[in-house]
Image (cartoon, protein in one colour):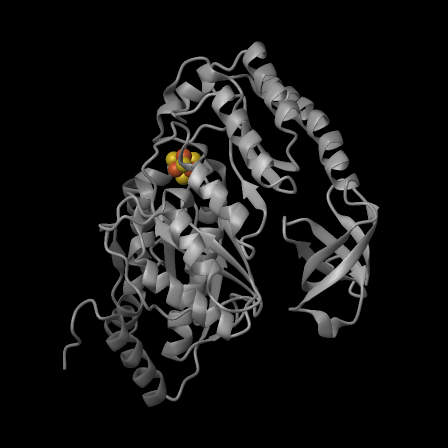
Length: 461
Ligand code: SF4
């Protein structure tokens, strides 16, 4: 009997029946590149595969299915993806039943799909990020009909209720909106992930409620432009309203969110953050440049002064806020003086930390064809100079914690020493301390006894 189109649940059942009939327990390996949104999408892919009867492995040799969830933000990272896909060619030759799927932003590009179709003939399925819900259907058809499937179509509606296999038992990510309308001139995301689509608030509230009831304590709301949440909803409801409703849920948990755009960071949102005890006092607010001319060329829609008065207001309402940002050095045409405006902004705002990027051309974006691309040596000098300004500020910010007792969510063992536990403060600062492993997944109080540039050392109270 033909299975109805587009119903992923039917195909999950179809796959499960197929594996039970053939008495197989297939293994899948998922390789994820890029941002947290991709990590979150991979958790959905895993959720669907688990329900379909798959177990998971971390080696090509053991896998019956390999999924590459790709990122298109950095062009040179795309080359790595091609290399990894190419490496599977001899594996597929040895084991023709191995299925290979490639998805994510990179696969939304026409020329990429074309190239994979022609030159990587061992790849079975290729699809963009909005078609994740159709993966069980593609996989079912690929296995039962042995066909190759390439699909670049976009599905603008949000598909709710997809199963999720979360990587962590205590920390969870919840996507609240998809896409971006901003078209910053250096960024490819709006071309590949489509326009902004907000999830229905009740669906988000239900998901967070369920996470809390399952014991999740550190929940991050996710969106490419998270604080413009709600603008496309038919009701009068914005991101601040969502935060307030989530904050009102019963339970002992923290709420964070990324990534915010300064132009959508309203006073209402800041006031709501300040008033909500479960909303972490942490704000990641990319500024990208301190030069008004460069900001205009980036299509960012705010100025140096507007950014500074916004962060002043944030600090006035939440003096203990941990403030971080993204910055790009060497945007096309950036002069020495304009770069110094960026340095001035970093000094003025005194960020706790920054994600600093050297501008690199991303083809398909307006900035890639702008005149006056900056010389690599100049970009690298500016990058180093910015870090030399930032590091003492970050250290000073951490030094302020000395002797204080802070609430810490215990995430797990330290990556460098399994005898040490590692956790995060409300502001997202990393704290290492000695304690029993049974505390992993709970909140504890820790007194800070040493302050380093990037982390804090404490002792359990
Ligand atoms: S806000 Fe700008 S940088 Fe962020 S995803 Fe949208 S276009 Fe890209």
